[in-house]
Image (cartoon, one colour):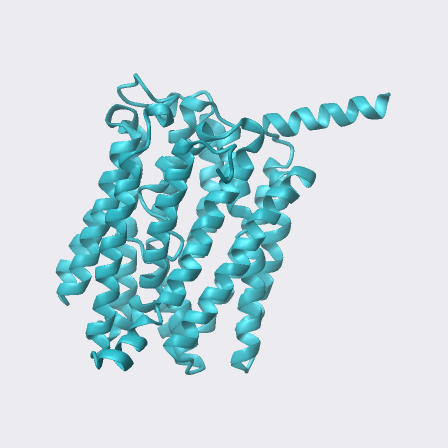
Length: 417
């Protein structure tokens, strides 16, 4: 069996996330263009993207408090089936109010990384599926699977053009076929969670509910969540759908070419995730997060200044190579600096922070785009992310995970000898 150090539950969770993110990656590329063809204004498109994140925020609170009572596996299945319903709605209705309500109830996310109400449940479950010394590695595999799936999903976003050419379908009908595929794939992901064992409930079993304000690690949980909220808001300004729309409107890049751009960017991000896990074992999780993130933000800012599509694409790819290295390291770090019984609370608070601050992002970005220029959301994202990185390094560079603490003691012992 490949990856024998990850147990069956871990492989099922990773597979489920890969299936979800493949579907989400395709939809995220075509969503803004599809909604525009339905007659939605740019502001409505931004609002629709924000509304689903509000639903995620509500569910993050409920998960953090009641997940131990309901069960992680049941919730993962329920949220995934909700996403399947959203795909049907997008395929069969063009009513903005109706789509907005369904997006809220199902916590629909327009980002391409598979982020949803399911994610804190997966994050809290994964540490139980691999040995402690491979924790960062299992998160890297988890994110690599999602990133590769997102890349393939972005490539699949070129399917509408193929359907139009081969079957003579209209552009709207071809895009609706993608949404129906999104529904089928989420059904398959829900089936994966059905076979996950009770082993992932370790640390939560037997609890009726959790009060996050009484947890032993509440100061670390709330401080990290507050810092991450700055990064999440900045990321919300630059949803993949809006980046796709930026290439489409500024340089006239065709949808098929945009699909290849996001395919390549996600493949580069996937490569960097494994590099991040290995680098973290040498220089530490916080250092890896910060020192990879800052250059990626600089590339993003410069991207807005270039006059040629090929150069903008090159900078976007360079940014993609570095911009996700903080993901497995952050997940590993947050799950290591708290106890097993606090993991759901930590993951839920992080998702809550994302869900509270990210919903205004697309709306703010489209408003800035309309009021000033298309470059402003990109520059704002880069500046905010750099500020977050510097603050994180200043506050947490000395807070080590258990294995980092052991490595430092071993180095000190060797030096004394």
